[in-house]
Length: 97
Image 1 (cartoon, rainbow, N blue to C red):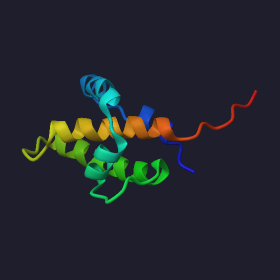
Image 2: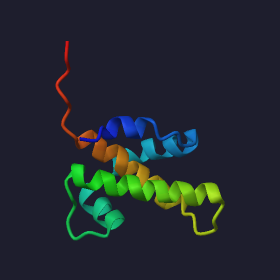
Image 3: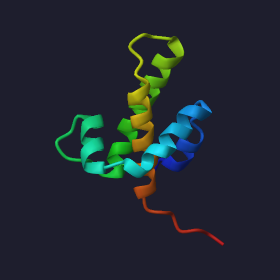
């Protein structure tokens, strides 16, 4: 199983982009936002949604770095918000002592 928490922590995106996404987590509405971001009829489980969100975020990051005029800062932040919120919904692994 993929450790999505580690992947998210290791993204290495600009600090301002991450801060903007953190502010938006409070207003995240899974039913509304996830369906829109993934073009789905109903929201998928976090385990199914996260790989799709990660793929979309990577595409947006490549577009941003290329300086492409089609880059949408708003969408990038929305995808990062969804990533952060969905990771919080994953069950925690039992801690080993």
